[in-house]
Every structure is written in structure tokens, then in C-alpha cells.
Length: 140
Image 1 (cartoon, rainbow, N blue to C red):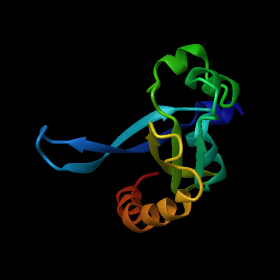
Image 2 (image 1 turned 45 degrees about the vertical axis):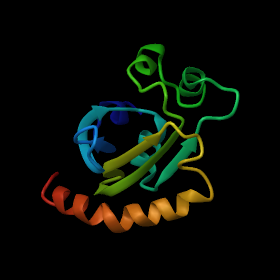
Image 3 (image 1 turned 90 degrees about the vertical axis):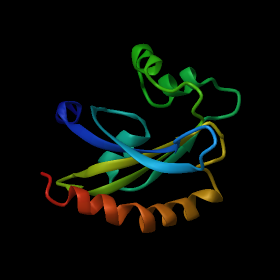
């Protein structure tokens, strides 16, 4: 576990952006590098398979992040508190871990839940993975 705590993961966060108030929305990918040891990104990074999860009814965001994912109170404060559904897709491999993780979240509880998740995984594989794998091709 100590090895995992010292690892860093590149996370591509898919974000819906608006250029101007009257403009059409467009998608962009924000790439961050961060340390982690838990959450849907951590599970995806370690298992190298897509992972999705939604906030259970009757549980607050903070309770869920601490109880289910072992985030500390300080870590939870840095997260977007209105998120209720999460999806992570591994990109490539680097030994026993994924090389990177594409992460998406939503304020809608059922956004990354059944029955939507199969089509979301397929669209993600078709649209984003080829581009991101090409970007990461020459990285260690």
C-alpha cells in the first residue's frame, strides 16, 4: 500500500464548458496529476477497469466520501460538494496500474448508473480513448 500512496496518477477530467453565456456548450478535458489512494479514480487506477458509483439516497456527500471511500475531512473539503454520480475509465497500462484515468462526475445521482453506464462506457471508448492513448503514447 505504501507504494500506491507514493504513486501519482494523471487524471483527465471531462468538463462541459461554456465559452460565453450565449454560446453552445463544448467539452474540454482538464488534465491534472495528483496523488491518491481511494475513490473511484483510485479503484479504476488499481484495477484497470471502468468504475462508476452514485451517492446513496439519504447520505450526504461528506458522509459518503468518508464512509465509503475513506477520504479525510480535509480531502472532502477540496472536492466539489454538489457531485452525486461518478465515472472513471482507465487509459493504457503502466505495470500493475493504469497509465491514466479519465474521470467524469455529475450533480445528477443517476447520470453514471444503470442503465446509462453501458452506453456511456461505449461512447467514452469510441470518442476519447483513442485520442488520450495517442497523447500518452510517449509517456512513461
